[in-house]
Image (cartoon, rainbow, N blue to C red; front, side, top):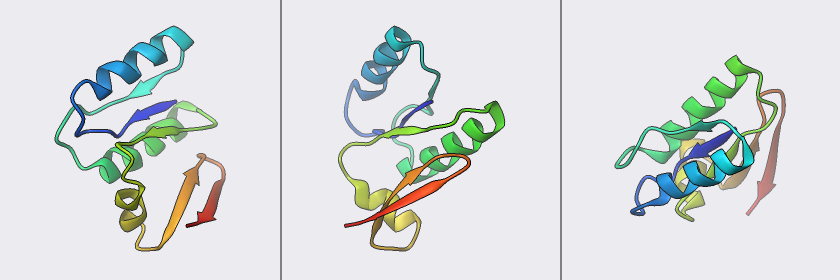
Length: 88
């Protein structure tokens, strides 16, 4: 599953939607001006419900937003059954 967490850049959600459709990959989106960390969390929950093994989180390049959500100084790679953490 792809998660559209670039909620700031104009056209970002549409661009990811186009790629997801071409690759036949489900996409989770909430539109613009949303909290990217909340969108990522909800996408991961949705992926777990639907049996998706991996969530690709597309951001505006501000990974610290997701890191702050977790209250740490790390980049997290999420999978519903596993989570990898890469130190920054």
